[in-house]
Image 1 (cartoon, helix red, strand yellow):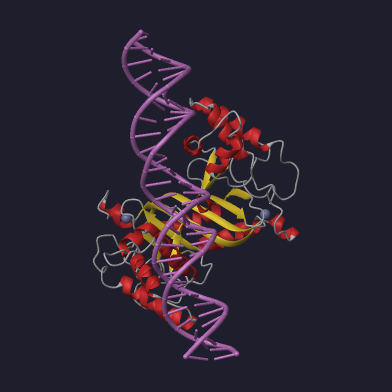
Image 2 (cartoon, chains in turn brown, green, blue, orange; image 1 turned 120 degrees about the horizontal axis):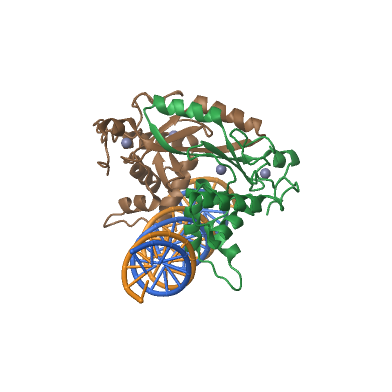
Length: 184
Length: 184
DNA sequence: GGTGGGGCTGATACACTGTAACATGGACCG
DNA sequence: CGGTCCATGTTACAGTGTATCAGCCCCACC
Ligand SMILES: [Zn+2]
Ligand SMILES: [Zn+2]
Ligand SMILES: [Zn+2]
Ligand SMILES: [Zn+2]
């Protein structure tokens, strides 16, 4: 991984993105990710004439701060501080907005959300790799898979409007380390 | 569809299976599906030395009676009669058993379940086609997709243990009819 | 300036999905 | 008969997501 997955499309922000289950014991984390994602989202909202409010920004920041799927209630909890109580319902609304804008993705198999700093349009045929050992998640586009699937669907006479492709397993880093529980 | 999807693997039971969102206005339904699935499951449980109890049978029958994803609470409700109240928790336990044995599949994107009369072993790389118009669901194996995905995963250094591939869209029948709401 | 509408948020309540814990009853075995 | 295993019943509860109403802010419009 790392410089392997999530290539494939323009990459207007040339610096390796934020997500990609960095849990693999590296370090580059903790300084770049979240901020970049938030800034990019803010820019895009401006150009799209949408409101990038504090709530939405904070929710996105909370999600982007982790490289693993976060539940809506987790997010609410993390955002709540002694002077500010964030209800889950508010988080859901923000997440609705963020997913519609493509800033976060929903992981059906976990009832959770991950941030995204890419610019794949709508039906990009994404694949999510979820590591059972470290809990990290990685997102990638897989043109070969997508075209094979399109062909299969066409053969079945089915017209797709959205796809969900999530894989569970063990990431290369965990596998290499023979890991079994160092994750948060 | 219809005699198109879900080919691809041995097919020891040569008779067109039960599911395959038959909702497309045909008729063959209502006589074969559910019963066949139940009988097959019963046979397999015997050979496997497992108990195919009344609850399990009835749950499977309820799921097999519909060619669309059913929620656990839906199932419980359908099974409950004036003389018999089935709690959702019982349904969940039965569903756990049935999914482990491969008699039903869970549809993550709907929090629902569908019956299966196939014999694909464990990691068969299934694709679920869910029609937005009629609500029907169809299951198929797609070797081309699977191999492309395996290759992609291998390239990413990821070792998969389970996959979820669900597609939403419009089935051929609905598309042909220009449908928009005749489903149950 | 006033006024109304639209979008965002807060807050409460509720529906839906899923699990934990404990008790009962039957089958099977010593 | 006592003990064990398994399936089920029952209750309670945790987790996930929505509906609804009210307040607020900003902005267009009068
Ligand atoms: Zn993405
Ligand atoms: Zn890992
Ligand atoms: Zn199947
Ligand atoms: Zn259809």
